[in-house]
Image 1 (tube, rainbow, N blue to C red):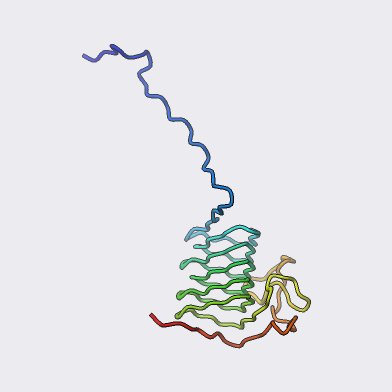
Image 2: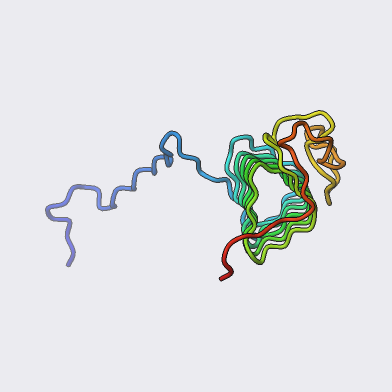
Length: 182
């Protein structure tokens, strides 16, 4: 009934070639993602890397850019170039650019060069402007009092506030939110 007439001796289809590893164009950064439902305990050091946190971290985080998603939570200090908070941070934040989105909840101090706060964000702590918040300065620790104790020497406990290094450094007791409400 069925014949192999006109076919070569091999009746099995050829196996597909293994997929080549995905290459990322040079200069493009692919974020490292901690998925919702994943809990990490310990220090994360990802200098220059982009992090997307949708799960929970109990420990300090250092990176290039970090986004804490709606379901994300960090119990510890965050030191990055750019920090965007949509979820929850219980600890100090030190970054050049900090954005608190409408669902953000930050319990801790913020040291920043640029700070934006959307309507609806909750921030309980003090904020301080520094011309270069990531530069080591005498009298100012790299971290702040945090919910998670730190044994890492790059994140020292205590307050992130010291004597101002220059007249450009100033302490504010609150946050002014501008813009139209939606």
